[in-house]
Amino acid sequence: GESVGLHLPTLSVQEGDNSIINCAYSNSASDYFIWYKQESGKGPQFIIDIRSNMDKRQGQRVTVLLNKTVKHLSLQIAATQPGDSAVYFCAEGQGYGNKLVFGAGTILRVKS
Amino acid sequence: EPEVTQTPSHQVTQMGQEVILRCVPISNHLYFYWYRQILGQKVEFLVSFYNNEISEKSEIFDDQFSVERPDGSNFTLKIRSTKLEDSAMYFCASRDTYSGNTIYFGEGSWLTVV
Image (tube, rainbow over all chains, first blue to last red; front, side, top):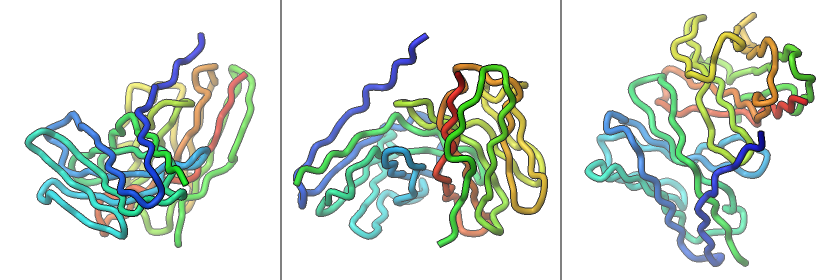
């Protein structure tokens, strides 16, 4: 039968603005979280990660915030550029070497 | 920058045929994974492989699927008898032992079963 794709939430931002992409994770035992960027037809590309003993981590133009109380993860992108347009996935993992469980994804569209 | 490489990039196969997807993980990585992504859906875990054996597998990874590390560099996913619903992008990924939990993904192999 016909497969129905997920209707991903979409965030549209103006070039130069800051973007905030949110993710709710499900497993309170998860101790590792990671954000991936996926461009059309390509594999997930690592952006930034954070362990559960931290609540904030910064990279180049990106910041990840972790709120374990409400099981919420966010990705902030500063000065968003057209090249940031993609689908962004959060993923959670437990322990060392174990699988990642991906969220549904958010489409980021950057308007010039 | 080292990367995970996958071949083929796209394969079309008849239903019932066997398919082998190939991957060369990043050199000196020791954990290997296969994930898949059906068009428009999220990335799903299939199997993880460490120390020459499967360490974890999902419900998707049934008896039709197998993985192998035939030599020191390749990591393969075999689908024994493909079904229409196996059509998806298959991603290989790897992780090293020393620099944390970051899993690096390849560009994927797009499998179309007709």
